[in-house]
Image (tube, rainbow, N blue to C red; front, side, top):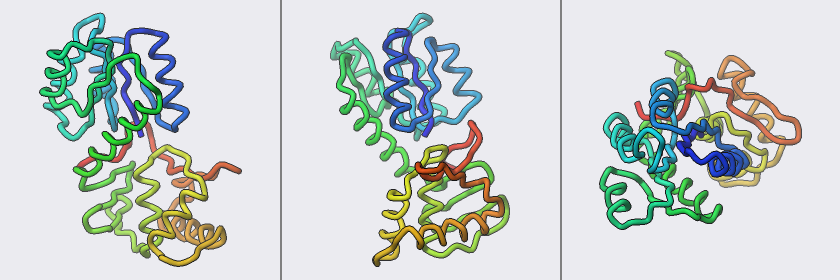
Amino acid sequence: MHILLVEDNPLTAKGLKYLLEKEQYTVIEVSDLSTARAELAEHNFDLALLDVSLPDGEGFSLAHEIKTQNPSLPVIFLTARDDEDDIVQGLELGADDYIVKPFRNRELLLRIQNSLRRGQSHTHQLICGPLTFDLKLGTAKNGNLDLKLTALESKLLRCFMEHPGQILTRERLLDEIWDVSGSSVNDNTLSVYLRRLRKKLGEATYIETFKNLGYRLKVDSSSKSRES
């Protein structure tokens, strides 16, 4: 998941970036509106985390632009401004949440997770590079080629595409298989289905192996799960 962090306080920005990257989020950090607009034009993001008071204006204007161009992109204000009028203005602009500093790390992470989950509920397709997964039909394509996947392979691919660029442990992937199969599965089962999925994708490099850590769907920086 890719997060745009707009925060002009260097210490706060550094701490937030460290916190989010520990949770396997990819973070692009900027300190002003103009740079934020440039990043939004160049990259696709899963969430925007905005301060209100910035050197070249207010985060409210950026939130309005984001929601006008991409209403499904979650926006969270993270600011020291706790005036009721500011909070109401932020929420009326369509922000998914408004968090006042100082904040608790665990609470922030939970609110981010909730906003991402709500955003995904409006998404009809997951798109990662040439891969497309139709959430309604449960079907997948590699470019224009239909992928003939079993239920277990489909669930694994969906899990990877919902977390592009993140390393997923074997335990996490085994949980996904269990949800579909309804029966006991083990490491050997996972290995078999990963091999089959890699073969059907056509290039084993789509799914990278990280020894003693897990697996990751390899995507470029502009690819993400997005609405089509």
